Amino acid sequence: MIDYGSLVVLVTPKGRRHIKLLEEGQSWHCSDGCLSHEEIAALDYGSIAITSGGAPVRLEEATLYDRLMGLKRQTQIIYPKDIAHICMRLGVGPGRTILEAGCGSGALTIALSWFAGPNGKIVSHDAREEFVRLARRNLDWAQVGENVELHCMDVSNGFAATNADALFLDMREPWNCLEQAVAALKPGATLAFLLPTTNQVQDLLLGLEKGRFDEIEVSELLIRGWKPLPDRLRPNDRMTAHTGFLVFCRQAQKSATWEARMPKGTRERKQEAAKKQREDEL
Image (cartoon, rainbow, N blue to C red):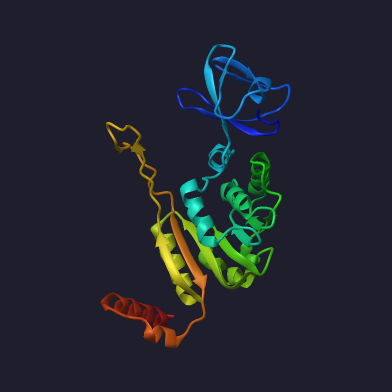
């Protein structure tokens, strides 16, 4: 049996997925009739329910993936393929405090809350009040968020918390907030950024170059699905390709001794010369 108050995914034979909150006295209506929530509650996940019009509907538990893809959005959301990597790299988990700026519709905020658990803490910011309200509604709908603080504020003036374990910035010009980010984090903390264009990544790299940051990494994640047919196994015709550039780094003390002992080939020497030229031009 499925408990009332659960988020249930109703899947049609054509693959359409509808997420509904199971409530007493309610019904789900579609072009093939209706299905009462009482009938759904009497079944188990994985069961097939039949609408009043005779159409079969499979019942599934709403996973984190379903909640992320089913939320109401007014902004472009961060997709699950990027969210999973971000949460792993930031070390999101119990007892950790994670800062976020640019919550938008709240997709990443939901995942951060999910992985942090009751002993973790998420402090999220957005400069636009309508996005803060939307993120809170989506957190409530996804049945998470008790460990989330939402602040309507511009982080260029600082963050709402200090001594945090990690930070994620989804902003147009994150290089303008690096000093504020460092002030809000523990020494050696990890920072992550999501940027859509290469010129923004270049500007961020220049900003990181001037600060106390190391282990800088730029990547993008691509997912190519395959057709699950044993006799004709081949890639799908379409794939989830570029959604954004992910940039990760750590706060790190600058050390001439460290730099001197790093192996340097032709590429590294050219990069070092270019960096010195930029510094001389300032």
